Image (cartoon, rainbow, N blue to C red; front, side, top):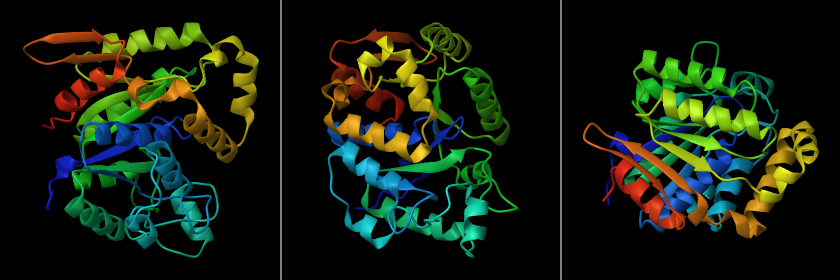
Length: 288
């Protein structure tokens, strides 16, 4: 089956590194699969790894899937570099060069088989691929619609506004904002940030990514200690909790869902998150 349209590639970016892109990508993929769609995830460039992309591995753990043939062929992560840093620096340290056309061709091959390709970027939109181009340049060139992952941490409003402003200037369509609620550090700031984003951008659907563990609300000091850990250790903790915590079933990805069109405004609060998710898939990704 051929699914060759730009609309079936959703680029997942974040306001910063370690904001929750990998978890969001895996959970959206799982949600689309539950809605009956054939979906695969892809990592544009992975740094800080050898041989296997830890983010692709995390996607598969969240989805409850083994590595796919496309994973073993390298299609889902064309570039893996050893040093945990920006792609342009990681490539230079490994004595390699990033050819963006290699990524494009890998995505094209995935689009031939899958209805949806969720392409996770490295870091934020302004991360350099090399000395000449940024991630946002590539997204614009490919005309991919974007899902932006943000959070309620202090400073996130500034980073979110800058990211959305950049998308507007580059003519990039923002399909949705994913608001990552984990880890919870300051509930007052997080609640205010969420309300600000809802009021400021009512036209952009907002997906709430639930907290990893509800108990974290009672232990803010643990959340602060968690933030002090290295990126790799934090990711491993997240993936472990997702895999074994009953609080993070896929049907909780959309406890609240907001949607607005020119003709109507719907705010739905659902006890059964799976129904809300199905509604979100149909409306926001325009699938049937």
